[in-house]
Image 1 (cartoon, rainbow, N blue to C red):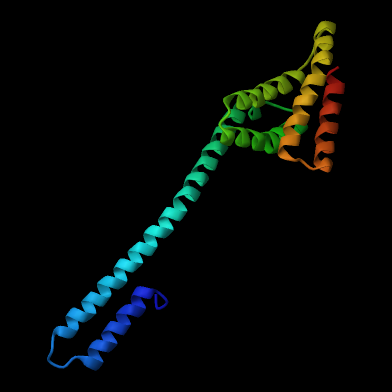
Image 2 (image 1 turned 135 degrees about the vertical axis):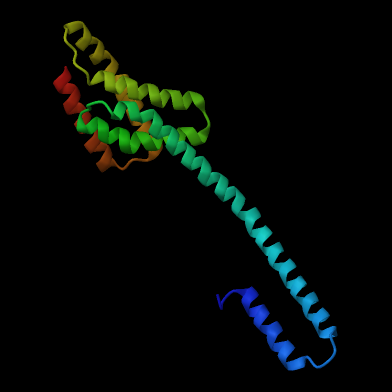
Length: 176
């Protein structure tokens, strides 16, 4: 590449050789020394850039691991037939929450977010008897609070929050 600093340096060396070389080979020593200094400087610059990039690369890898952990956790639930509102919540907001919890490194918060998924999916399943519906009705306020807490932690906009909660309300009303 003509814009590469090494290319430009080599062109300069060749031009100097053509212009200055007569019979004295000392010019080769001078040019080799200058090239060595240039290459040492280039290596030092590359090392400095690598040191700056290392934390960014590590952070990116951590985010990728978090996304993979969230996807693996959600995979079994998302393979089930779920109401559209639940699948939407899990694939967007709750996936983001799981990624965030993973990056925080707090296993208790991670487990809490995972348990909420299980509770949510259980809550939209059929409730064949009165006792099951009563238990669901008593669990719903806690479930809704956990849902709000997760959405608050993600700073989900009110419009999106309303869509999600309306959908969940409709699903739970049908179950009850």
